[in-house]
Every structure is written in structure tokens, then in C-alpha cells.
Image (cartoon, rainbow over all chains, first blue to last red; front, side, top):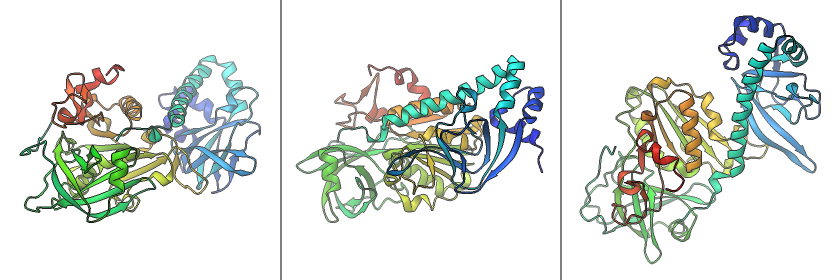
Length: 155
Length: 279
């Protein structure tokens, strides 16, 4: 079985991160699995973790009264799930539903926030990486909102 | 950049083709299969080229050829209903006839892709112009390394060629939709979000992209950030093509004409024009 440290080190999100920080991160990490149909977190709950998805697919959903939940995006192996642990009030904004069996490494957000306060260089590294992912997802969401494939054309 | 231009006797004179099969792909998109009425000559074209389809009494539109270039006895066109002529095309039935001029334009660089990983990125109806290239890759699979198809559509109901996608197993096919209900088991998000799932060697990969221009812009950025060179990125452009032979100027794109110099361009060749909003 692969060690947690090795898995974290090899995950694309932490690529090129200094080894000493990998050790720090490993101290806040736990292996987790979720069955198909299981909620990893639900809107409004305390956001005290984030997840490195190793296998499977997670749907971000939002519940709406009198209709079925609306799926907004899927997160797959190699992706990172969860930003809300980084910003007050530390509550999830969406439901995260395992669409298949999901293997993930969860990172304890409280533990990491404390370590980032103690070592701002680590905090900056994490903020940079999350910032990049957030920018990519914001851009993707904007394109999604454009409804490009419906745009009128001539002919 | 054009690898081949097919000689046409009189490019302005349509030939009569008869429809022998109509396939309903989605609620607004149909594929028509047709062959020349005289049946004296085979229809030779290269993947990526297009024809001008003339619906008698209605008008003429440029539509990419969506069938295999290895099958010269008939051709197929996949058309989404978006206007008067395309509505008329999709109302045609087996036995009806249309006028065809073509084939026109440049083709996908399938020779250049030999020995490389190939990544195909299609958005919406953009899968149709890429389908002949996919057929070529399938029938010459041993010449290419890893082939990945990334396909994004609006909803699961907009997915084209659903029966065929399952058969393209010698390639990695990833599909994503922009919006869906809870019955969909696949990916949700724009097509660029599939790129991290694709395994390819960026130094030895050729990318072919077709879809709405905004989608192509973001896809190019995402592929560039993965290390694919501009000389290995090819896109199929669309403009208001009329004559199809570079005379009328309707599809002028800077110094180039989409009908004659395109529709397939190497990104390196047109990147200076691609970001110019006046063009």
C-alpha cells in the first residue's frame, strides 16, 4: 500500500511543493473512501476539510425546493474538492455527492489553517495553488454560463 | 497549410445528389447520407473539407462532410437546424435531391499526426467535421499513438453519434455536458475541464479542435498551458462562406479566406488574427 506521503507528493495539486511541506501536509491527511450515492459533505455543514480525489467522480449539487438537486459540476480523479475550509464562515456552499465509489485523501482544514498561520510561506504556497484552481473553475463556470452551443448562427 | 485541394471541374456548378438515408441524431440535428445521381464518379474528399449544399428554391449553405473519406460511394452531412436552409435540409427525406458543390477547403493534418499522440476536442456540432478524421484514425490506428477525444455538449440530449461513441473503444473518449438532470452519469462542466483527465505527451501531440470560436479560444489556452506547441494545434474555423472558392470575400479572415485557405488552419499560422476582434 502506498504511503500517504507518497500519494500526496504525487498528486498533481502538490507537484513541486517542497518536501518539508509535504511532511507537514501528511500530518493533516487521512485516507477516506465513499460509497456511490454517499454525500461527502452537504451545503451549510462546517467546512473543515478539503479532498484530493484519487479515484471516482463527485458531483457538486445544489438542492432546490420542489425539484430535484441541480448538478453544477463534476470533480474527478486528480482534482481537488473544496475551497470553503479556507474562508470564513467555513461552511460548504454545495452538496458533494459521490457518483461512483470515491477514494480520496482528506486534509484537515483546521489543522492546515493553524500551520499556515505559523508558517506564512506554506500559507502562500497553498493560497497560490488554490487561487489557480479557483481561477480555472471561475473561467469554466463563465463559459458554461454563456451556453455556447445554443448560440444562434446563420444558415 | 493546405495539404490537398481537390480539383473540381466547375466549382460554381452544383451536381445533383440524392438522399438515400436520413438519421435523426438529436431533436434538432440530422445526418443525411447521399450519393451522386449520375453515379459515374466517386466522391473523393479529405477529412475536414466541406460542401456547399443547395436546397432548391431555398438557398445554399456550407456544411462539413461527416462521413468516412474511405467510403467514396456516398457522403454524409450532419446539420443542426438553425435557419431557413438548415431547416429545409433537415426536412428532406430519402429520395429527395439537393445540389452539391465541393469538396472545398483544407483538411485535418492526419499525415503530420502519424507517430504522435492525438487529442481531438469537439464542442457541440463541432464533432461532425471531426468525424471523418476520427474514422481515419480508427482505420489506421496502428500509425498513431494514444488518441483521445474530448467532447462537450449542452445537455445529454445534444450528444451526437451516440451509437458510434461506444464503438470508438480503441480511443479514450470523454464526454461532458454543460447542464443536465440527475439521470446523467457522466461529467458536467465545459470541455476544457476534461483536459486534465487526458493522458498525452505534450511534446509529441497533435491537437485538432472544432467548436464555437470562444470554446476553441479557451481550449487552445488550456492545451498551451499543458505544453502543446502552437504548430501542433489545428482548428476548424467558420465564417459566412458563399462562393467557397475565395472570390466573393464573404469569409475573408485577414489575408486569408476561410473557404479556400481554411477551414482547417494551423493555430501558429493564424494566431495573430485569432485574437483580433475586428476580424
